[in-house]
Length: 250
Length: 248
Image 1 (cartoon, each protein chain N blue to C red):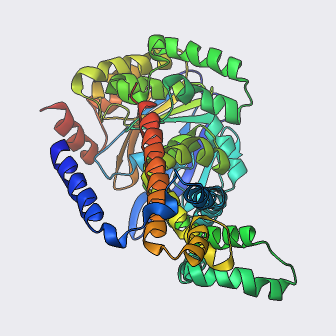
Image 2 (tube, helix red, strand yellow):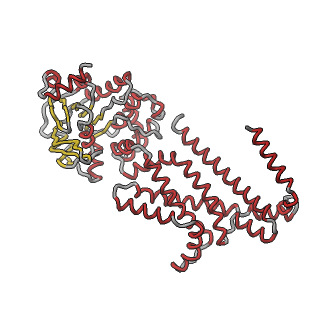
Image 3 (cartoon, rainbow over the protein chains, first blue to last red):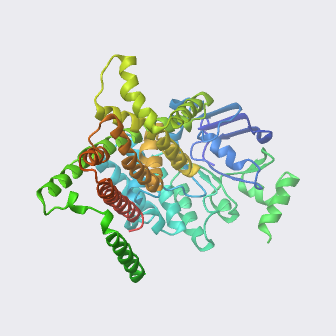
């Protein structure tokens, strides 16, 4: 990790989240610093997706505080829009807008919420399409692209908002196996460029490569949070050891 | 298939011809002056039928959308406003609404209203409840991920609806909207009761002077048929065009 700056860019303290009776997050506290790459893993239903969805307000936490880049996240529209412009999100199911071309998918955010002109937004969009290596697909519609290409477009769409933080919610889980690496390569490149990111994933090879911090969640709690060397070689908790054994040896 | 249709058509024509004793097509025979005038008189109602229906559908779609949106809100009070409107308006028969708007409302408000606008208001009001339900269903059918993606690029409610949700919803409900337009064209015939000079009123007036209801109402049926087939073709064309948008 880089030298720790004075204040974390994301500060989560004592966050609880319930869905009806089910507790999805239990007293979760986590600090993330500028430029830090965090990978969250854990069994399904452990609260990892809920956690990153809370960070940009797609889910509302019931108690505790979430502070993103110096701002406390509340339910007010102003707070939500401000936090969302700082934290980009990439979804498992891509969620591209099917009625818009790739280029229009990318320019919508900059034009409508950043005040860019059409021309400026298009230049920006092409810049990021080149970065995810599919500039030639700009005039196509999402359904004409492969899953891997769609996810790369979705990453570019988030980058067009020029966020300080990128959140990835199982970005490769909906992909055919042969397309996983093209998406991971793009994310690795992004990580190398110094982007602060939180990624929920089961791709442990990828995690080992990019993570500064590994977080393991189970039953809505953060069970373990440590640098990847220690996390993979010598995890503290029994639950984490169990989980790693299951996903690493099959 | 074509042969079957042709045979059915030939059978229908010969049946009609065989009861020639009871038909008197002279009333609308375009080769005679009076027949031609009668035809012109009948077709003259087309303008008001179309103007009335298009104005009413434009208003009812707008009102329907405005009413649909609170129906999707998370606040119960807002949803109740939607339900109340839909249930109330849907419960009034169109004919009753036409009479109420034309004869009743001026008494209540002290303002006189033309036949045309009374018809537009009654038809639009009545149809808006159905449009509201169509829009609500269309919007509800859009995947939650689309809202999340829109929110994640910082779009507010209005932009999310305008650029992301509604364009997709409208594509899905286009057949239903086309249905409502067809329905509107047919219901516009009811406005004849307050004296609107549309297709049905014209036919009624001609029947009174010519005493040939069979021929005149047959022409009336054909007029609506042509109009509605044209609308169907238009809607289908629009559907195809919107689909090709996404799969070129």
